[in-house]
Length: 475
Ligand SMILES: Cc1cc2nc3c(=O)[nH]c(=O)nc-3n(C[C@H](O)[C@H](O)[C@H](O)COP(=O)(O)OP(=O)(O)OC[C@H]3O[C@@H](n4cnc5c(N)ncnc54)[C@H](O)[C@@H]3O)c2cc1C
Image (cartoon, rainbow, N blue to C red; front, top):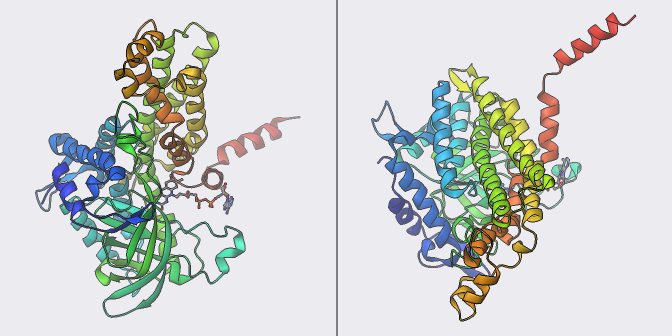
């Protein structure tokens, strides 16, 4: 097999019949026909079709001669890195960057883990060879992934990690066939609508039963996905332009004595190896490169929405309005600059071309602060337009003409004005939009700890040397 089409993606997921729950009921039948999943799975299928139809978004593998997604490309040169970005950009342009877990994200994570096997010593508990083989399988079959790394939010105090906490997913036993896992993990965005589930213990575990890396098919016996309520509150795209197409859903994942076969166990009961994979490996720079590439496109969308609102209601002459739009433009340009600087200042490591992680960390950490401000700006500019949101049915009813007349602007009739403002509302204020804000706040982890990571790794020697020099020069 080679890169798949949207039809193949839908066919594969629909036949999994995984154990997925929503609103107190198990989902039966084809997942892509379920109201909550139909829109987003159609969009995901469209992404695969875009990749399939665009030769520049995939590459021919030397070993097999087959076409493989650029998101699985191991970067050996800066051109490889740019090819990876081009795929993310192409997909993000189709979704406005609103699907954070489009397949490029997790394919990148697996690729980064594959690249990091160089830092893993094979032992009874560590199996880099299996990870390499699984990566090859994922490339060949163009698998889609969800992941769950975090433990449920029971008690985050520092000493809580020393508790014998059997609520979190952990290895309960091993046998000839594999490891047996029991407990829960939080969260898996797109949980249930991918081929595979990649499970990794968040760095900082203290109990070796909680230290692992493995991947299993989504429908593995004993795994259940407990989805939050759907934010696709309306099927009509005019009414819910974004949530009807891009709501990825987020699920709590429960493992009820799940057997993970040995060939899928890459690390188990090994705190040092899971930690080294994260700290010494390429997870952070490569994954951040994909994330920031998407966030740049998403910021372009926010800028476009803000300017469209300004133009629609004729407020562009006011200075504070210009300053607000400029704030988004400055954010966009800064993100773009950081992304390109990270690419250009990357370096060769272990034979790979690795983007510079510091500008990427700065970009993602800054976005956690600026994204909520950008959506706030759109609310401030849109004002009452963000709430006078009549439905398609209203406009088609006997009062439709009246509404269209009284809601018109100088550049659009009422129905077209509301179409734009519904888009603005769906990205800022709808349940889908507010989730997007939370998502960006926590996308690559908690902002506070990310800032601490920047503090820890940022080279400060030049600044310190300058201070010493000036102190020395001061009479
Ligand atoms: C919409 C959404 C989708 C997600 N999708 C996924 C997914 O697909 N897969 C996945 O694995 N994860 C996913 N996550 C989880 C995400 O990675 C976490 O939200 C993030 O890492 C923060 O962890 P937490 O939510 O447990 O917050 P917590 O760690 O519980 O933090 C809560 C608050 O306490 C503070 N705090 C807690 N501990 C400390 C500490 N040690 N030092 C300082 N401050 C602390 C934090 O600053 C924060 O303000 C998703 C989250 C969201 C919101």
